[in-house]
Image (cartoon, rainbow, N blue to C red; front, side):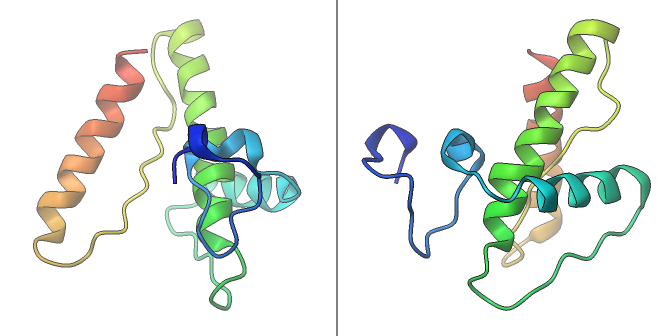
Length: 112
């Protein structure tokens, strides 16, 4: 479901995406904590029971926040300090998919 087609900010069990960030609220503290951990640690484990909103926090909260910060870094300093990449396609050839996701993430920030 695209953000344009949303008639309600409540998605049920469908995770929010970065495009839905304007509709995602109430998890600011969790998003900030995860973002801070990602910035200072090579490994951050974010876990919890199925259906509690982990993907939504990551995509509409953390990734959105870090990508906005990266865009600001590029505008003010010429380079991003961190470029967030969300990747969850581990079937088939995950290495090729991961390389492609990283390349697309870099290109998106660079072209801003």
